[in-house]
Length: 318
Image (cartoon, rainbow, N blue to C red; front, side):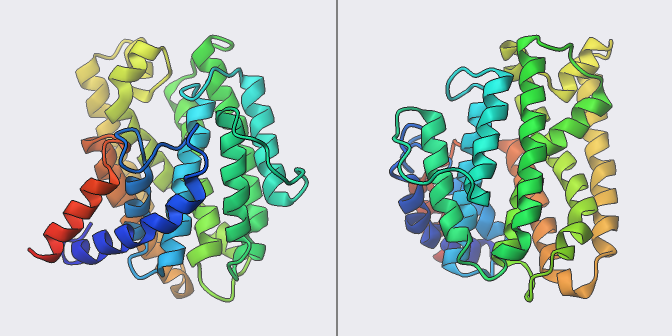
């Protein structure tokens, strides 16, 4: 994040943590306590604050909680939280869409496992989302992105368990741009922090740039995780290039160069957007810069609320 914003962003993230934790706290099957080394609560609120530093505490809390809930969905789809088939993942996302659309029955699902925890947290988040003025206009695009993400995650699961052969690089990246959930996050963010009055055309306007940002994020994440995913037998852009005969060093160089190309295209698309979307343009630039750099440097769960508080104090008194 820009040096001039560090103190304000860290403080805003820390202020949002209690509100986000109220939504996630009842669901410890999937969402670890904020001071656990396996929690993503601090990172999620920091990412939201780094993206929208001028947002209100409630907006940052809602977007931080959304980030954490999407991480939980990804852990389920990736069989990190439980052991699921591609059909399980597909059915799970059907229920996720149903909660948002209102077709999924309400009431407590119990907290018997990670899927139940994810559905319950998602239901609570959707109730908060609907209170934002822009939510109604942007719910259709959010449902559309959840549909694409669910299908892409089920396909990724089939690749991982051997139900289908691994894809080539281009097909993998097209799918991975959906499973990184950056597009899903931004479809929701328009409803929380987008321009007012909210217009359904806002998503169509930002989608090309958002798709490029998502692919930047996917490849940055792949560079961080390819050794772990090699052990797990999961597809990754670096590993796919290796299978095609490229050395590890050359594969890393190619992916790094592709990130630079995508970043340039991403910036060009953002420059085409109208002035009414200036806040979204700035947010997307900040989001890709912050998250991409974080993915390259450390794990999202390797940052506790206590560390966030220490960083905020240090920066404020620096």
